[in-house]
Amino acid sequence: MDPVIAARIEGLREIIEDEPDALGHYMLAQELSKVDEHREASEHFRAVLALDGDYTAAYRGLGRALIALGDTAGAEATWVRGLESAEKMGDLQTAKEMEVFLKRLRKG
Image 1 (cartoon, rainbow, N blue to C red):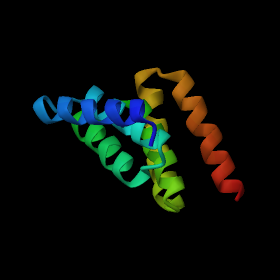
Image 2 (cartoon, rainbow, N blue to C red):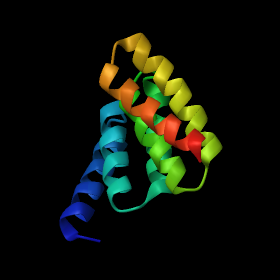
Image 3 (cartoon, rainbow, N blue to C red):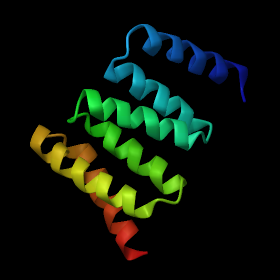
Image 4 (tube, one colour):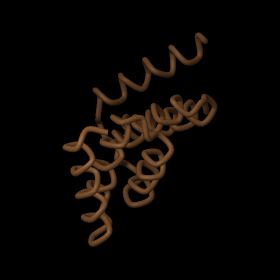
């Protein structure tokens, strides 16, 4: 693993250990996804959603991590919930992205 990314991941782990907030978990999940640590990334995306159920980008990221783990049903359910949340929150860009992901997934 690139030493810069490894240092960033460790720094984010320390931050959320001291103060486990949604943004810290999200940032850590994003970094873990970049290095194909999808299982751990999915745990942190879930932590984001446990802290803030309308953090729409976390639904997008969790769905992608689940796809990488081979859990297409879980990804679909996540994106459906995320799409509902994004529409409720007025996050049109994230909603559009999840619509595209769902269409691709359902096409097979």
